[in-house]
Length: 307
Length: 288
Image 1: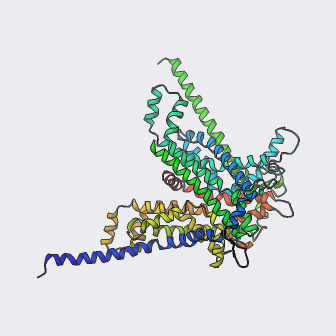
Image 2: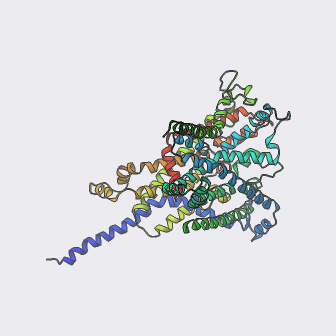
Image 3: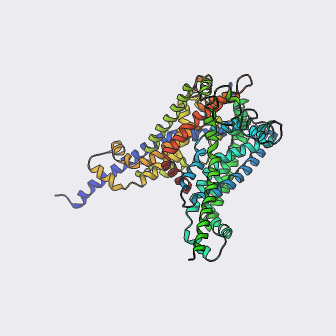
């Protein structure tokens, strides 16, 4: 005759063993993902630090040089020029994208016939690659075979050829227009999710109280969308800081090498001059900048939470 | 209501609708015209292709000259399209398998350091891959995977994982546990349970993961530019840098137009057909 305690004990032990087995099974399921992340992400990140303390040529032995790469970085005028250009580009693109994307978001939010179709069309450039978009626009902006220059001439503005990509300003604004064309639809959708989360009753109440359209936008819509705007802002800023394709494909960093972004500069140092160690130190600097931007981002988001 | 007032309101409504659609069509033209312009221009004859696209449509009859010229670059356009397609498909399949397993593991099992692992995968989003390209290049060389499409695929899959694992975990979280219990009593276990019973239930999540994996790997440029050094392994965007650079200082713009179309059409097709799943993924990402 067995006691009730004993009969209970058996399944409990079994259950515990199965639970332990379950633990291992869980690890098994996530193992492939973890292996990839560790080999192709965690190790490269740690390796970047390690490499940044070396003189690391493509062939031959790497040599430990301590902080030399970082000292060089701090006195590297070209790096600071690239940094300044990237900052300038980031500010202008972000402003341009918001100026276009906000009205579009308000436009497609209206429940009217055709709104869905418009939304799809505005979004189409988002799904093609940045490299593809750059190629498309470098053709459109070409002086002889493109569209924009010859079209301006045909409409009778001056007899001279219009070469948009020959001057810094012309090339810069062509790239801005291309990026707005490519990205505005994406920012529009992000902003749209924010607009849709505002209860319609609030807007109605404000309207009945006699608030004008601008007042409602300024005092009601904007504050309530703070979180969404912060998110759209962060995505736009991060994307712009990492810009490379458009400068490489559209202007090859020109005119006069004035369009070298930070990532482009790292690319040149690592894979054109093969200063892999110095390239790593530059990468660490880029990482530090992005971490600072992330902290600012978290601040912005938290401010959104308080309201 | 007087007839005059009603009349006025109708007129207002008409002009409101008019303004709405005038703005909509104007903006839609800005976003759509470059595609249409390139598509039409790419169908012009070889001699016409170097002229400004005014008008954009072929005036000397439709031809595929530009595509034929594009074929003379690198190892031929079929080879490079095949490279891009293989890389994209392999990335899609591997991303789906790896994130399906990981999503299931994170959703249904308890194991030590679970949260640490999850955060580690998601945290890779914070570090842009552009900043680890230099060591990635060296590590792939050490593994014998430099200048190989396999290496490129593995890098792309890793880049897709944070978003994909997150999506799949949420998809599994939304499946009620009772379904699993019932299937287990019926004798389905482990992988069989996952594939036969749960996979159909998380299919929308799989679709979203697959679309993003396809678009990102098909379009990616910088990593492919750095990691591939053999001419006949180039994916389409890398091939196009050769077209863009031109031969003997002359750029064949017809080939550029044709190349843009070859790269664009699959993206637009996937997006337009599977838009619902694409937007779901985007919204899920935006809300987080």
